[in-house]
Amino acid sequence: MPCSTCGTRLLIQNPPNWEKKCPTCDKIHVVNREVAVRISSERLLYVYDLFLRYVRQFKKTGLIAHIIWERERFARDFFDNYKPFDMSRFVAYNFLIKHLMMGKFNGTMDANESNTAELVKTFDRYLELLTDHIYLKEGFAELVADMPFDSSSLTVQEKLRFRIIRTEDYLPLLRTYANNQIYPEEEAKKITEGYRPEWERIKQKVEGEQGKKIAYNPRVFIHNSYSILNVLYCGLIKNAIYAETFDFSNYEGLVEEPSQIMDVANGFLLVAEYPTVTPLHEFRNALKRVFKGKAISAEPILLVTEKNPATFPLFILLEGNVFISHRTAFLVFALLHPILLKDYFHDETVKRSKELETTRAKDAFEKAGYTWVPSVTDKKKSTLEIDGLAGRNGTLFVVEVKGWGLTTFYEHKNRHEQLVKALKGIVDGTKYKMKGNKPVQKKIPSLLKKIEYAKFNMNKHGFDSNVFKTVKGVIVIEDFPPITEYKEIRIIGLEDVPLLK
Image 1 (cartoon, rainbow, N blue to C red):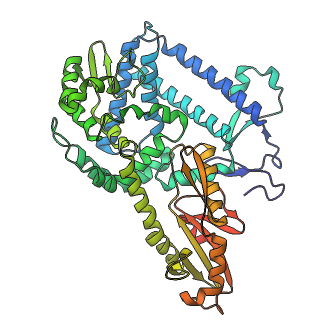
Image 2: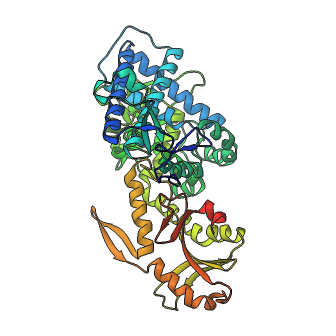
Image 3: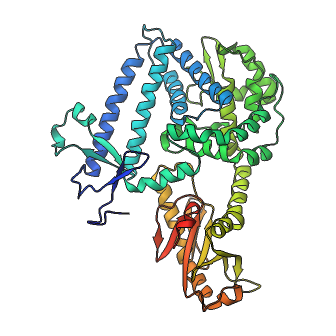
């Protein structure tokens, strides 16, 4: 909520408690948005340029080889021990491999385990700055100065001292991430154990024996592993930078099932202490075995080379040998399900959304002490349908339930604006569907109309009008909404049902 004294949007800092501060009342120097974005962009360029100067001191091939091995060790550690999955670190590995393959440099410094790990950590910190910049641009954060300043005379070092602080608009994002098991590092460690049984089931489905085709049913795999697949999908494509790194659009039309990626990788021996490398001709033989007549067209899509650096860096050619990253391939295998099998994944999403309407919302309201009546219609051939009526302490809630929550590009404002538009449409009786590239408006029974129906017909559905004097509307969604009220209709996440009054 904005400041109770002056109405200014609050800033939040010091996780996990997220202390709230008012820029006006607490005299915090918030930088004008246009100036703030410019300063943030300039210091990002400065930091990235420093990073590139350091990178260019290395011998190119050796550095890339070490980053590939670092990435595979990271994936193996996650696969074998099921530790918290550091998404930012995984992005850093893949972004670096891809962009270093594009780069023209060849210094004199030899890469080793120590300096490669430090380089990746440094770039990971740069990605954190870049994510903060996205929050700033999208209105989820502000740039703050320690004291008044003249923007025309700032030095680079002075610009680096500015802080990006999240606004209260960031809290729904934070809660939605937490609701989908995406946490800051320390919290993630506490939560991970709860998902270990599911992870073990996934491993059993795909591990198999080396060289044998993975036996699995894609629909069953998506059903059994949906929560983890959705976290990977939405977490690794949460903003434009992440999405650019995990762009698999060229896989469509070639990879019919994600298991084909594992078929290629598992055709080569996984060695415990060293990266697996194979001559180019052996890799080509593996492509022929898996992709048959499409093997020639598969090579530029699946293999990164200096002349073909733009595709996702799963299999990489260096000095005539191809690096095979088995556990990295497994993570890609999992991620490809919602990307390449969109229809299957959509069907499972719809199914779970329906479960929210029919079961989970009911359970949440009943646990909070409400009497719940589901699927209320005005007549046999209904002109309106209410997801549920929930009554307690003389108040009857007309409940609309939607399975809306975490999506890809979740850190961009337009995603939240689309959600706001859809939420307001429920209240106003307007639904938007895409026709080509344009949203088309369709009239539906409004929640306001449903409230009026409930006021005069509650007795038909088991609620005594002499007891329930107050009738209100509420929209319940899977995660946490960007707005909490519209036209006196409450809008809440499922977790907040017990707080409803």
